[in-house]
Every structure is written in structure tokens, then in C-alpha cells.
Length: 438
Image 1 (cartoon, rainbow, N blue to C red):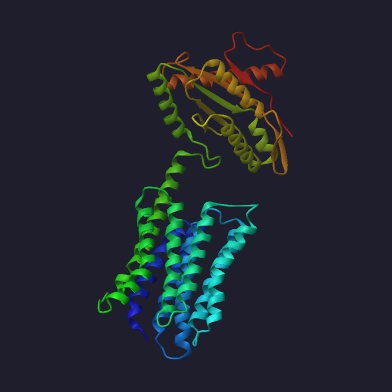
Image 2: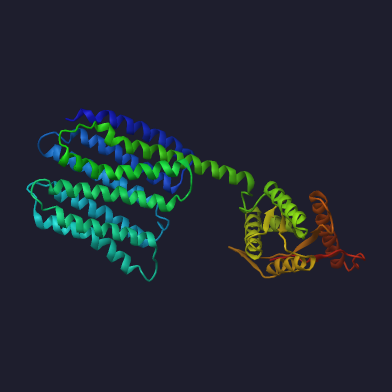
């Protein structure tokens, strides 16, 4: 038995436990696939320990070690596919796992049967290409065609080297492993296009991991007396593990930052981020001597929705309204949830009072139509107050007070109109729609 693999097995097992601890606190589909991949790497080292045992059991352990190493790489690659939910993507995953497993099995059986090797090599090109062409009308993606090209190239390489006398089968297996982990490098480059330590370390780790399967055969062919410790060849694995842990931590930090600045229910900016954006907008307007506008929108009788249909429907209503508002304004503007049933909109310059009123009217028009909330349909209106900088107020706090006051004036005017009482004279620019729940 090859006990030299035991330290690597222990190291990978410890890394897998550390990885599992991080994943448990930040469970995502990607992290789950990564953890499965590292379990496969641990199985690879466990199989490598028994691969030198003579006879059938040693041969089976060697096959298990290779298959688990390949499966780990394919899972790492597939975890970084942005279109994993596509049915055709799952078919390609199954095709790659099947082709890799079949090739390793037929190349490990002695004596080697040439036609089975040829058939297995052809599957690497035919399987992904066929699935991609069949699904072409429904879905296509540049990364898919990169994968098809990569495995078509592997198929051609295998057909050209696998039948060479001597080291042909070994070169073929090394080419297979290089393709799997170079594919991981490509997919991670596509998925994590950001300048962070986690992305750089992981991508670099996969690049060096893939090239282990090219450098080692070259050194064996041209410098057979050169001695390289096994831990050196395994070092890229640990680099990748560290990089993945960094990626998970970076994503968790970014998620926490998002939660600190956004409303958990609607995903819109919360009051804290709203105030920062409003302050920045006013500063830009002050510097360019232009105008900005603030709209404060309050849903009328929102409590009636909660009381009659339940808080769950009220939450759905807030989410729906937030989505409608965010889809109507410009990308440079800000829609925030600043209270229970209150939304605020910051209109960046260039704008004017007339434009701000028109935006308010367009937002109110969205609420005239019945809103489908699953089992219930709600027709909701709102009151809005408009304040323009610097005409109505020269500072942020005063501008917020002005917008709030006009919104409440609008709400009182609505209540007075519903009761048959004339509204107060001199009403400031404000909009109102009656609220009706069904």
C-alpha cells in the first residue's frame, strides 16, 4: 500500500472539514457542489493509498481514485456554470461524467481493447456537441461552446495518442485530467470576473493544477532523473481550497454589506442608504447648480390589507409595489423603502418640478391596475408628496420635512374628499389616489 498518500488524505480531510464549517454558515448551491468536490478529492487520496495493492482490489482502488479526481473537477466546473438550471446543462453534466468514467474504466482494464478506447474517446466530442446542437433553438451561451470546443479537442488528442506503444494510455489520461481542470480555470475566470484575492488565488490554483498533468509527463520524458516530491504536485489543490474558502468569505461579507444597506423584504435601499444617496444627489445638484427632487409615497390604508388578508399578503404587496416603482424610474434614480408602507424616490438631476410631478403621476398610474398577489387581487392607491431642491429647501433634512408635509397634506385632502369636505386652499404639489382592497 502507498502510505505516502496518507498525509495528503489527512490534509484534504481537514481542509474539507474547514470548508464544511464555512459552508454551513453560508449554504448556497455553489458551496454545496464545492464541498461535494472536496469529498471526492478525499476519496481520491483514499483510493490512491490502496492502488498499489496487487490484483483486482488494487486495480479497483486505482480506478476509484481516478474517477473521483475527475468527478471533483467536473463538479467544480459545473458549479461555475451560470445557466445550471437549464435542462440541457444538466444533460451535459451527465454526459461529461459518463464519458470520463467510461474512458477511465476502459483504459484501466488490461489488456486494453483498442476499439473500446476509440469509442470512449469519441464520446467526449459527440456527447456535448450533440446536446448543444439539440438545445440550440432554446438556449445558447458562449461558455457552452467553449466547453464543447475544449472536449472536442480532448477527443482529437485522445484518438491521436492513446494507441501509442508504451506511454500512450498514460498520456491520454493526463490529457483528460488537464482538460477537466483547465475547464475549471476557464469557468472560474468567467464566473468570478472581479479583482479579489479569492478569485485570483482560485483561478491561479486551477491553472497550476491543470498544468501538473502536462509538466509531470514532460519532466518524466526529458529529465527522468529529476526528483520532485509528491507534495509539490499536490500543492495546487491546497491553493484552490484556500481560494474557495476566501471566495465564500468574500461573498458572505458582500451579502452582509448588502443586508446592512437594503431592505430585507423588498431588496430596495433602506433608510440608511437612501440618506446617503440623497445627500450625494443634493451635493451634485449644488455643485452643478441644477435641481433634484424627492418623492415620498405612502400607501393608503395599507393596514386594511394586513388586517383583512393577512401580513403575508401585505408583504407580497410591498414587494410588488417596490418592484413596480424600481422598474419605472431611471437607473440613475433611487427607489427606497423608508418605512412600513412608505417609499421614497430620489430623482437625480437634470430634473424639474414639472418632471418630478409627472414621475409621481406615472408611479401612481401603476397602482391603478389590480395587483395580482397569488390567491388575492389588490387594488391599491397612495398619496405622494413632492419637494424640489433647492426651491423648497436648501438642505437634506428640510427637503425631507417638506416632502413629508406635502404627502400628509395629500392624505388629509383625500380623507376630506372622501367625507365630502372641500380640500384646504393653496394645496402644494401633491398627488393622490383612492385605495380599494378586494
